[in-house]
Amino acid sequence: MAEKKESYAEAMAKLEKIVSAVEKDELDIDQLSQKLKEAQKLVSFCKEKLYKADEEIKKIMEGEGN
Image (spheres, rainbow, N blue to C red):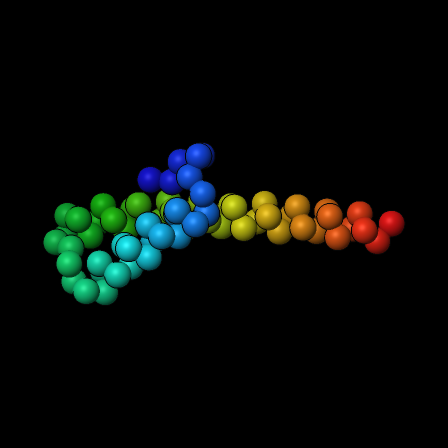
């Protein structure tokens, strides 16, 4: 699962691995359910990272305008 210490790149790599396994039908129904839950958490983690980065960039850009 996504942990605080995990980077965006690591989370994306895990997501890509899950998507690949799903697309190749490599998961049984129990694994599929587990991996989809993990993917959902990873997506939330990535969205949060992107949102925070966007906010930081906006602050920096606003500071340059002053």
